[in-house]
Length: 484
Ligand SMILES: [Cu+2]
Image (cartoon, rainbow, N blue to C red):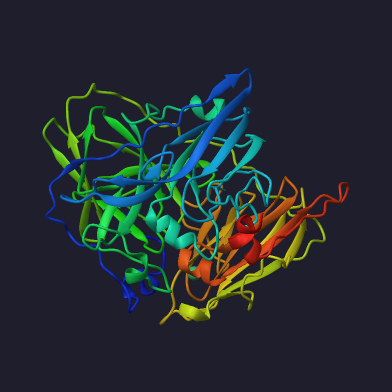
């Protein structure tokens, strides 16, 4: 079975929004698709691996002419790709060389909050640093690193801070997936931007419902070309946009196979000709170009705009069939006697709220015992006619999506997720289990909504180890470094 639709509710696609900025077909010259370098460890001592990551300013040749001032993690733009192996103990030295406070949020990593997780409670001040360490204990997946100093997250991501994170494990390594980074296993970081005299100007482009740009920028490249040298190519697609939903398909309706979602490998491969990805989601797909010959070109589109060209070169013919079963995802066993959690995303523009409230860094909005599996009903109360999709994100765990308005979930939602796009007027039921105690954020991942305060925090507690968390105020997060 090959699915040929976007699954989500068409009336609330972002292109119906009054402030929508469509992508434009560009006449800029083609450029090789940028493949971010891999981050190299500072040292390796047995099972302990040490890294340094620096949030920094830089310059990038994005448009012809003047270079664009950009931000990145240990790179002028975006960031070096970080590869983590399951079971390894990582020590990371986080350095801030930006002129303002930032944080290093590991989106999708199952690490303790609020400090290692890198939300607003873990500021790194200009000229300062912070050291974190954790043992990576989750399956292979594509995650990402981005700043989270709300209310400035959206601008900092717009300026360029976003790095892809690849987690590997021995089980996934047995599957016949392409895994040669930069050759047949490539990051696809989807973003959209505008430039003003070749520079970014977040204020000029700001939209409360999510800032949009007319240029499709993939891995920092506009009008990119990827030279295909293998029959099969694995795309680790990350929607790193502030707001934009990407509705992806190929110009020749070429089929592709989704093999993973946010939290790793899907139970079964899903054949598609179209996929829609809301903000912060990850979709890993394999495209098999076995029907193409050298010299052919296939173009990836979003809506009707070409965004990335694949030029087919010489490749060795392969005859790889993906197994029908890829991964075992246990059925969630809901903790007996537990109550369903109801959480509500409401409003648009400056009226957005989570559970009727705006974010307060010193307020714990919910508690959940670690190890418990609890059903959450996540509702988007906007009405269908005028509403929009809010992508709901939960830190500190991967959840399972069980139903949409009581009905079947989308065919590519049977794996672990940490973001789920909730249509207007919809309630999505998810099963949530925390394994590590800590304070975790949950919020809409339209970055401007998050910055406005469409966010709350939950304490995942361990009844056997009471832990007091020091929750800093927004003033301390923003200005604490100056007092010190
Ligand atoms: Cu939202």
